[in-house]
Length: 305
Image (cartoon, rainbow, N blue to C red; front, side):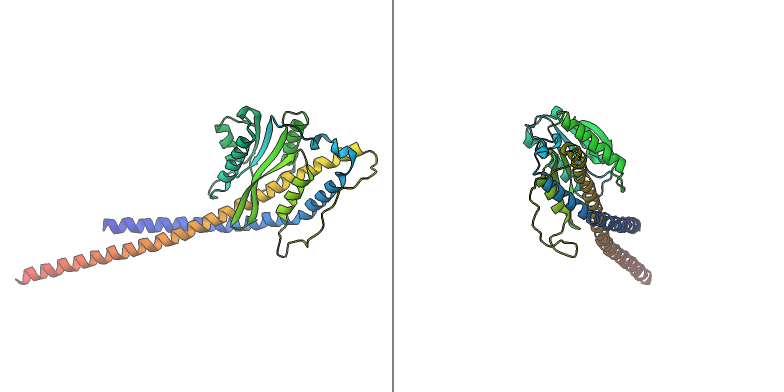
C-alpha cells in the first residue's frame, strides 16, 4: 500500500504542475500576439525610415555624419537583449552564445568590450565573465520611451567620443511561433544596409501582412533647409532608434513564443507521465488485490484442511 500511495502522490503533484504550465502557456500566447501585433503596426514607420535614409545617403553631409563614420574597431559596445525570467528553452542562451562568438570573432579582449544589458540573464552572464556592464535595465512587457532614449544616448555618446568604434544590438529575431533566430545588427556606424535588414526582419514574405514587392529607394541629392547639418543631426538619431525599438519588440515576441512552446511541451510531457504513472498504479493495485485474494484463498484452504 505504501507503494500505491507514493504513486498516487506523484500523479497529483504532476497534475498540479500541468495546471500551472497550461496557465503559463495561455498567458504567453496572449502576450506573444500582442508583441507581434505591435511590431507589425510599427512596420510602416520602419519602412519610411529606411526610405528616408536611402534618400539622405546621397547628400554630401550624410557621408560626414559622425554617427555614420566607419573606422577600425578597437573597442565595441554591445546592447544585449534577453529576458528576466527563464522557462523559455534556449532563448537566452542562444543570444548570449551568438554575442560571445561575435566578440571572439572580432578579436577584442574583455576590457575592450562594454555591455548594456537589457534583461537579467544578460546582466548575470556578462558580469560573471568580467565584462564592463555600463547599465542594466529589466526587460518588462512595456517598452519605456525614457529607457530607450537613455540607451540610445549612451550608445551615441560613446560612439561619437570614440570610446566605442562600433555599437551592435544582439537579440532574438521572431521568425515564427516555433522559430526564433539570434541576431546581431550594427547600430553605429549607421548604414542603409543594416536598416533595410531590420525592416526586412519585420516584413513577412508571404501572408496578409506582407507588402507587395517594391523597388528599393535609390540615393538622391537634395537641397536642405535650414542646413544639411541641422536636419541630419535631428533625423539620423531617430533613424538609429529604429534598431533598438524593433529589437525590443522582436525580443518580446520571441520570449513569449518560446515560453509558450516550452510550457506546451511541459504540459504534454506531464500528461504523458500521468498516463504512465496511472498505468503503473493500476498494475500495482491489481497485483495487490491478486495477492490479497491469494492469501484469503490460501487461508480458507488451510482452515478447511
